[in-house]
Image 1 (cartoon, rainbow, N blue to C red):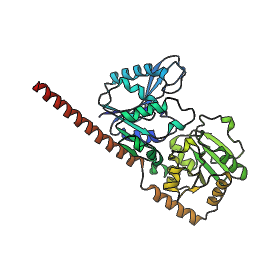
Image 2 (spheres, rainbow, N blue to C red; image 1 turned 30 degrees about the vertical axis):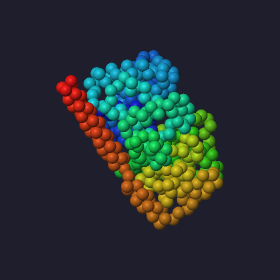
Image 3 (cartoon, rainbow, N blue to C red; image 1 turned 90 degrees about the vertical axis):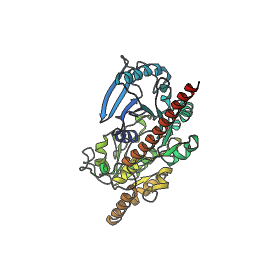
Image 4 (cartoon, one colour; image 1 turned 90 degrees about the horizontal axis):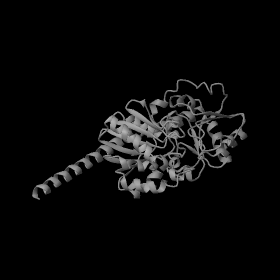
Length: 383
């Protein structure tokens, strides 16, 4: 195998998370082509291409239609774009990697040596999920050679649907988050205490908790870093001490997080969060900062001993108060616990383990193919 062709519902320049972490590392071993969902309503239909990282090339389709995602309306156009680009680039010996089952029809015109499904979220439970998602995931489970899952809950949900399902929970680049470079300019003028969240802001965030913190403690500064998607920004709680700072670069996150006294994971407990394994939890821990989370299963089970858990607005505020009341010695001891908790994981290790499974599967398929060719040749001679 020489190339990974990846189909993703997330854009490369969106929040830097699992796809970017893994694929930027796997690009040291194989060429990575990252194909995004199309940009809609464009006057000119074309395939934009750019390289955001060494070994990674993004193919971003632009289409005239207005149906969102890898919709049936775009399939023929996307197939033409992709087939033409593969011919021009003389790409052979490739595997296909899916982040969304919605792109499965695009493989009909391709000839991959193998197929990977990295199931990082239960997309069927997200707001505005396409109705074809379940059916296309069923097809993907039949066609895939390897299935990776983004956490233990997803693994338990998917493990009986395919003979080769492997659990790879969210990980962290601890070195990246160990160097903050000082407080970030956007929050440097804010008084303390500061309580902060970074990540996508959508239907998975419990806004009642955010509102409760700001209301109960006007002296607390609530810093919310991340893009607002799929929900009405006008519905966000608005108080003088809540600061909606929008999407920031991955490089800037350590400066934000290290400037917070409490890190927040105020997730709603709903269908969309039932299987999530939050990457930000480990990023908070890598900065040595204490966190308060709602009872997300993939947070409670491995990290409940170092992360405070609370669900109701009253309990959530009380948990934050307790963290802020810790002595300097207690803070130092907790920071050491956090460092120990994340010492066993890294994106480098995760990517290496995935690569080993891919190479093993690729060798097995190659040996099977060679054996079949030899058998056909023998039968032909006998005939």
